[in-house]
Image 1: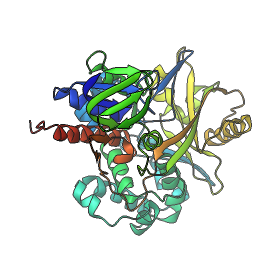
Image 2: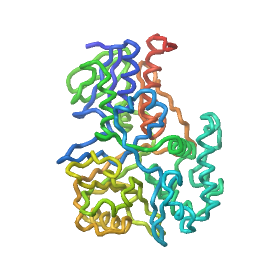
Image 3: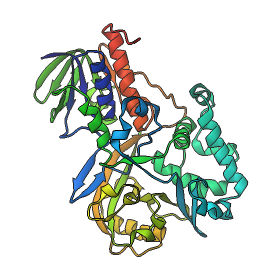
Image 4: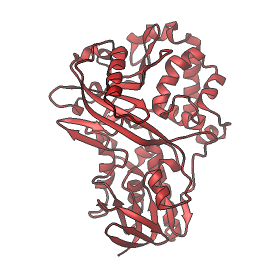
Amino acid sequence: MAHDVVVVGAGLAGLAAARELVRHGRDVVVLEAGGMVGGRVRTDRVDGLLLDHGFQLHNPAYPEAMRVLDQAALDLKCFTPGVITLTDRGPSRLADPRRRPAWVPDALSARTGSLPAKLRFARYAVETALSSRTTRESRTDMPADVALLSAGVSPTLLETVVRPFLQGVFLESGLQTSRRFMDLVLTSFVRGVPAVPANGMQAIPEQLASGLPAGTVRLGVRADSVSSGCVRTSEGELRAKAVIVATDPRTAADLMPGLAIPAGRDVTTWYFVADTPPMLLTDGAPVLVVDGRSAPGPVINTVVLTHAAPTYASRGRTLVSASALGLHDSSAMTALVRTTLAQLYGVDTRGWEAVGIYAIPYALPAMVPPLTIRQGVDLGDGLFIAGDHRDTASIQGALVSGRRAAGAVLAHVGVSTSA
């Protein structure tokens, strides 16, 4: 069977590419080996609970999200733009004082560094957000920690707040991630407030898929090989003028030997139903909690999801997520995570029920310096590639890469996109 374009993979990049191609009148089929769309952006529904595949947030300030998503329909539930960090001298709450005036004394406390050091970090973030993309990308690239220290961020603030917070974003503890990617992350936090859709993160790919013609996405169809003009699948051969591989990076490398992909970052996320009164957890605030102690536990971040999105747990239950770097599935590790959560929240967690554990290999591509934000998507001979590993490790990057791949395909088949 012949089509204009075959897209392999129904994650955000593949769906975004298909959307753009359909918008320009192309006949597209999207092949997905799994049983549902979304790729790494997935949500399980278990006993009235919404369990995302790994702790994920969506920022409505992402430019591409504003372009392609009906964000009002997602019914986004926002988190407090701030952080609670547990230091050796006790917890400290940091947030925009206009949103959390009661937390101002903590901002003035020396537990997390001096006020001038915090103001220097805030200035770096705001000036970065106000800079043009060209200006940000023209800066000499370097590891994130080097860039922050060079900007005057004190070692105390870096170790008690910034590193614990950013390691959960980058999924690496050394802050060796490119400052160019860090600058994009800080820009998104300055311009928007992270959130989750009321019905779970999978609502995002489901919305993209719902905008495609019926029958465009074919679930349960595995691509075994790709070549110029041809995709061989578990159900036969498909011919096409162009093929876009929009799978995870490792699968893409298997389908196209010789394709260079970045190293991957692994993470494990646990979900607990807490038997603690909700107001005893972060005073009811939907805020990220991190470990800023000199000898931290394994949990890189944790949050009471139902403080922001009560829809994540039926019957008024309290759902807490916690994440650790690497892949873990042992009961001993779950016990250690539960113990660490008791320290981070200052409550007894022995009665917290573990209701889900998600070990996610290659949860994010590593963004190391020197970082080229836009990797090529046209591999020649009618083969194209899309995914956050071609742009940035984010929902924004996945969506943009899909649009760029679609644009390259349209140029390949001689379709003008000037309109």
